[in-house]
Amino acid sequence: MISVTDCYSAFPSSDLYGCFWKRYRNMKFSAKETIQSESDGRGPVPTTTSRHQSPADVAMPGWGLTLIESHHAETFHMEMGRWPFHKVCWIPVGRGLLELTNGSVPIRRDDFLLLPSGTAHRFVDHPGEPLTLVIVCFTDGLIQKNASLSPVFGALRSSHPVGHPLRAANAYHESQIKDLFKLMLREQGGEETGYEAANQAAFTQLIVRMLRSCAREAIPTRAREQALEGAIQYMEENFYKPIALRQMADRCGVTSRRFTDLFKQRMGTTFVDYLNRKRVAYAGERIRETGNILYACYEAGFQDLGYFYRVYRRYTGHTPGDRTTPN
Image 1 (cartoon, helix red, strand yellow):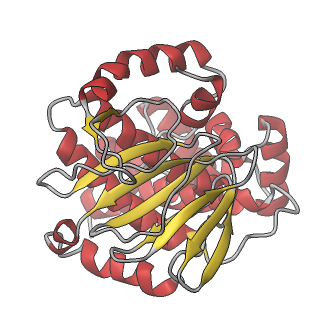
Image 2 (cartoon, one colour):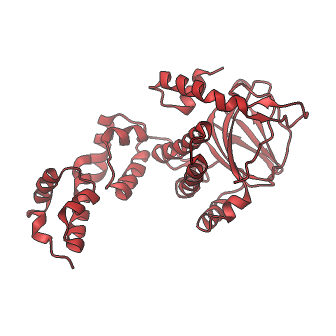
Image 3 (cartoon, one colour):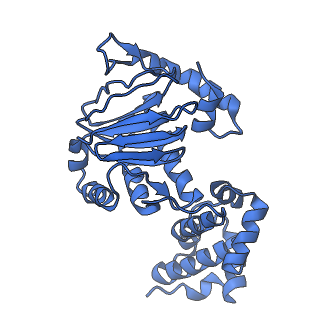
């Protein structure tokens, strides 16, 4: 059964029709996958979005990465166990405890967890609020085959106590991490050509983003203004991409008007002015280096040459053609 709760956790709340259609379309994938019950060795159980009463074995593909969705029933029970692969988990629904050999850790909605292979653990649901988990399962082999990812994963492991929740520094970074989980689920569910490569790339982004954006302890939630810092950082790094004010506001969990006010208070200028200044400065550098105005225009994120000329002159007092001599 496809529930409204599932829709809100996996798709934008404004697109419930799209949610139900996508979940229905992907049921063909879920129905053909089978798993074995971990607790009593019963026969194959379909991997559907129905509620689980016990955990399930993971059929790890040869390339070393797979995702599972675990929707716990009220009667869910899990024994303490160890698994021969790593897990990165997102909790979109519910709350409870993560039990480890040295104690229990409270976990709740939108926590992220890193559970290295061999870590003894089990999940215990809070009565009335059973957990739903999206779990990325991956092998040491996958990490070792990627020379650039291996040290990043090592840094993530060493920077956080085993099993302690990783919480994004702000709503903006949290939404980026959740989007990567959702992307990987869609790729695996669709099984389109190249989905393995797409999920390996998304997985690399996930590990990097978690290392950069997650804190060991809960970040105070006294105001959503904290998310603004993440949006500013994104603009600093991605000013050359199409960036809409509403997109930034949605990522921060505030209205467009509220985002506009917060941005001006923080930066002393408007969203558009800040973005244009970043783009003009970069375009000026590229013009001096290449002598190619059209190339610099598009590389800096402008889509229209005439508009670029007007904005460039407004901010610099001269035209792009005044600086077409390469260094």
